[in-house]
Image (cartoon, rainbow, N blue to C red; front, top):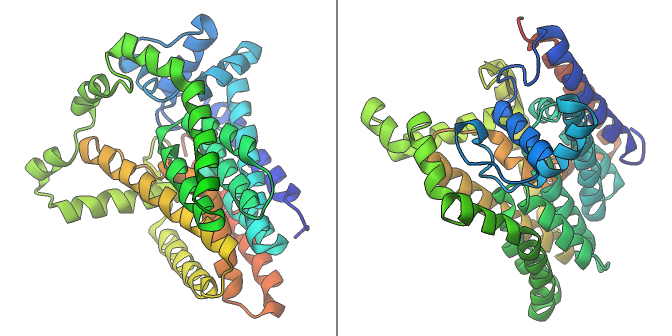
Length: 396
């Protein structure tokens, strides 16, 4: 592997572009070609609305994703004006490539170049992430915001001046999806652990105020169109019928709370790796089990290595734990009311997924075998992606 993040970033861009062009060309469908990418119909309509009207649409079934913060749709609208939905998909592919680059930066800052390179490859080659980066979905910009914020935080924890950049990436992340809200307590605790309470307050307030100022208009717009700052009551009324949650599954299938939690956790993890064509086509179960064993082994390796971790790395891992906890809480609360367990909600955690998995995988091996094993893992995942691109094409 090359010493740097260029190769996996380029690979991520090419994979995203492959999904951009393969799905509509093979299917022969017009944009947004059905529901291949989850919720894409609403994302296309919302982006087109912004391109034509440049204001928040009325929240209803046609614009069912406009309850999310609007930054992805606003920037996507500029690309729409260049060339319609195709250019918005290319924009998403660029976001996916940038996410891989920031994963490399985060892992390099904490674990060194070798882990950084492998971490970037791991994120680049998650099949569902590559597929989603070929679609129109706000998750792409939210993932970039969360990944970039964690990368910049890692550099800040090493003593570099990154407060303004960190604040801007928090705005990008939260301005695209509220799963990034956990960045604020994560930053506060990590910086406080590393530098003390005063520095933590300064950095966190800078990020929080930047986000509030940048999103104030969105809160006001929601109050105007829905009556509350998050459009939650309007959203719940819309989705209670279309996607009922735990109470429905308890009444119709006898689900207990632990069984329901297991269901949303299991399907969320599977769709993190690969469920295509509107979440109807899944990777084979033997592949999922293989990935599960690999991930568990990598986490074990990372846990063993963390016992010797220095203060900077521990502070960053504390931030990761906080963001993972808040994202999981948001995921559970939403799915408890509306059953839609999608692993893409956790793409804001791609940087720690790549960094921790890459570090743990290499830590399990003797130094002489690490490079060869990393090459083998990357080649295997690349082959899996090419197979997914061919096998899960429409009509197959």
